[in-house]
Image (cartoon, rainbow, N blue to C red; front, side, top):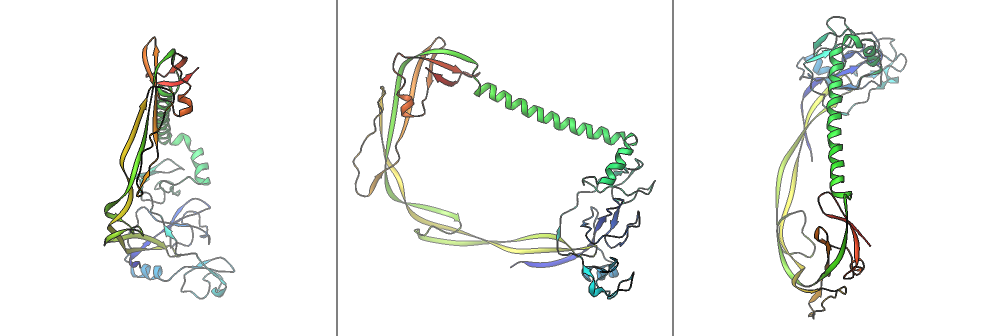
Length: 356
């Protein structure tokens, strides 16, 4: 069972859907445009989040999810019984969603460029020091308002444009390099680059038939449960504590930082099982087109394993002797001694295909 420990509370932030301004989580109206915080706005973790120590802020964080008035939509603290805006009974209100585990915020950049005037501000700031416009959140997809403002100010921020062009050039260069490598590999190994006429000078086959017998096999320190037919079983357990830190949305502009720990137990077993093992292999070889397999005698506690075969065809060409390995018996039996074949080679001299 997981053990949960509260480490403290942090202040979250929210993005105004009206002007894209970044606001502290507990603030009920946008500091930039004055728009009220919508009841469905999402809270985010701040890049520079710190555990709050102010007693009033801690009490507000512990109070629970805020309530949106069912009549005027005003956001009220969980401890309120009537709306601070219209005085309505908050029993008709709706509590904000809470309990969601919030993802870590991207690291705060050293500077954030204002999309309105192009001024560079410290990465931790929410408002531009020069024009007062809201600064974009680090490493997020630009919202519609920010995109429109950025288009209007393209001439003011040539440095950012140059960086974007540089990134695209870098990614494009890497992609082009990988594409060239793939094309080169295809040209070297898959595409024929030379055609020869070859005459079959010799063929050879080899077949193998294994004899198997049940033998005891020892396994040591295998994780998990042993097989049902195992014997001489000896198991041990190793445990370790695994902890994970999470920030949980409290629904009131604050996040609760908790550490959840649980004990992870892994079982390791040593045991013996009886398995079929190859004790001897019977091999036959020949230089004709009729491969055969040995038929060894076996006792009652033995069995024949899966037979295997290998085929080789030797061609005489103007470039010397080449060796081809057919993939099946039926293909191998086509290569009559003295027959002529068209052989296609790749750039490194390996056979790509053989055609009659």
